[in-house]
Length: 531
Image: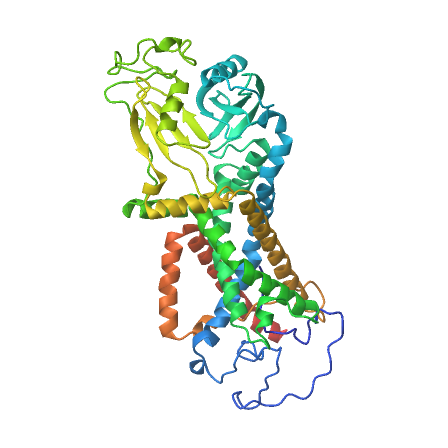
């Protein structure tokens, strides 16, 4: 993403990028807009430090520059530095995101024994499957159960264990037809990521560094949309011979021009997806995510949840119903029903709770959260593919009555969009097509970064000795922006910097370092002249 002036050709002391020596130049002619005694040559930089390329108008003073012509060098300088300094973080995020998008299919291969079971004639009671998991792993406490959504899939009994990390559970895989335990694996998050995907997910989010690593991902997400939209403005605002060159790489070009064409055209196709990735990634970041949550709360658009609270009673960790519900009619004689063995008479059992949820309209894959003290069963759909099935109900463990229900159709609009965005970011929303789209976006971002650094390298000076790299647009470009543009721009930047704190802080650091380098350069210039 480290792109420099897309219209500015190599200077006389820089590589042309195609391996050929620069062609002899004709004597430059004076332009009527240039100050007397100066020349303007396409591909060079004039005395004021602005590009004199063919698509950047020359001007005798700053008052003659307005609109995009004045704003473009500022956007170019920001895009250059943001791409140069933030690109390493984006490269890590893109590479880990690419691997994560492919891990869904890898799970099906790596953990096939745990995930699949031979199809039998009749499924065993859910309570028996839970009992088998408890017997195999007595160190764990069952918290919830993910029921299979298709034939041949195993039941996942999720357990809390003493050594489990935050947001992690022990998933015990049970053959639903024989109640045989087929294995146990670590499970992470609401999507049930298994070890490979869980490791990639945490690396993508915080580099396996825990809380300190969250700064990396939030910083990358905060700058991604800035770099992407800045590049879009520069690419669309560049003059070209044909509209085709806007959409696809130019033919017959080599060197830096070829790299620029690849970088710009691919960025144009990928920009929408990159901005969406940035926005959805920010929703669960530490600081920006907190601000987004506060706005949703103020707008009454926070994500609702079903209430499983029992009126005036409690339920123990094993799921037994509490006071206030004993003696309800219809409980007598239920102890002998399938799944009721060993259950307190005040608990109808997980099988009947699922029956109640199915009767309430919860079809498809579901997850059952077992009762705890003061709470009943919570049963929720888990189908996040389109059309989504994310309804949930709470079931009274004493009599199977529906305590509360929540339909996804009743979510506030902003909560729905947040749900869609997060699930799309995770590759869940549309299943395999979603995962392939994420992989394509991640690969595109990797290529954009590589091509951006290549352009920077191709613009390096070659005549002077020592290491050199391509230089950005000269300092002071903001002075050329008219006040009618500059003041709103400063106000919007301040507002965005407050809402996205890591973006604002890092931008201030960039400006401070840039100012310090400018002062240092000016301080050295007289001494060099005397030497």
